[in-house]
Image (cartoon, rainbow over all chains, first blue to last red; front, top):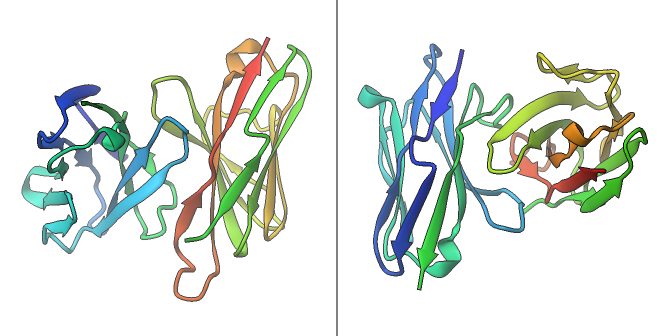
Length: 115
Length: 118
């Protein structure tokens, strides 16, 4: 069975602070894919990143960066110099294929960035 | 990126009535569509997977006779909540996967439909 745990249910930061959202996963598959999605108040899920289990390189995209560590089954997401527009619920998810079929979502972390 | 729409975006209905939610892929053909349910402040739970032209596959615990899914074309899937009850009130999200060149395996999410049953 697959499981994704996001231990932080809510995080509140002040604008310009850095913030890391934790994600820990469980799977018996040797090949799997990890995703992060953003869900702003409007409700629509926004795809942020997909990472396969064989690629442990960290990735940076603007103010966003991801740290994938297979040894600890973690795929953490860091926002540098947070902005109010970053306020949203962020979901980490796990799938057996790169299309995200049968996605298993974590519980989500609600990030509130205050001005 | 690809666009998936849902209609309606929100609906209020009385207990006992049925509600149909549409999910459309606007600029690509969706061979597979997924339906999720999200309760307030909770995560998304997969309800069912539907492939065009075949019956939907429901997740354990989801009543197929209550949540009717039809995927009659490559651009449209519908979810009908039959005999809705207040406990069916939720945010329903669809996603679609399908055949754009180079992106046949991408999954795109719709904006969601908020259902309130009174």
